[in-house]
Length: 264
Image (cartoon, rainbow, N blue to C red):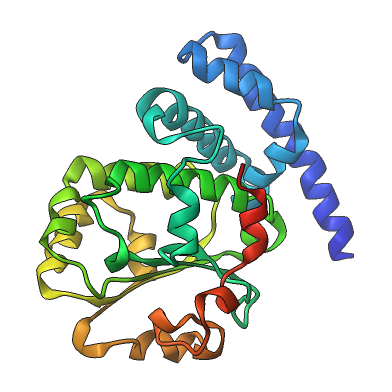
């Protein structure tokens, strides 16, 4: 019964979704590059379904997210989108700076980890890190069942962060991250953990706070260096986490290595 209901949701949702895209294209509104992108995806049900499912079959929300994806990708922040993998991406993953865990949590949600303190902004800029993230998410969304349907958990370890990291997180840079990853991708971000946050980094959240949604604030769990991984481990078992998050696994055991094979 549930399968039949989902099929009906998809069928009717796709019809309504395509109608909204078609109406936009008929209106001749929008930048030519945005219109070109939307014209290319309107007949690709697999792409439209990712947005539809990621937005819980809310057609209006799915349409707004798809349109925002086109706008940030081609108009607002084209500098952080690439069709091929950046040269610096594989070293970031192999060195355990970020990745997708093999294991899901007890609710079947995928987990993305970022070892922020291990990133050296003198060697790789925040713009380059953002480029790696956009390419990474485009790949990860191919695993749409668990990533889209079950939701996503993001964990950032901030141990080792210093003033050189703080300085590059200007308000425009942080707004770029927000506008891309939380407004232009059809992800159900269920929980966001910032662990081992140094006291001097906490003011960054105060700067960006007025611009982020109430729902995101409710799902953000921030703990300082004196708390370590205590809060994180109350919700996610150390048995599936890498050692840099207080877990028991080496990076090679913890991270999904199959994703590396998709990077081209």
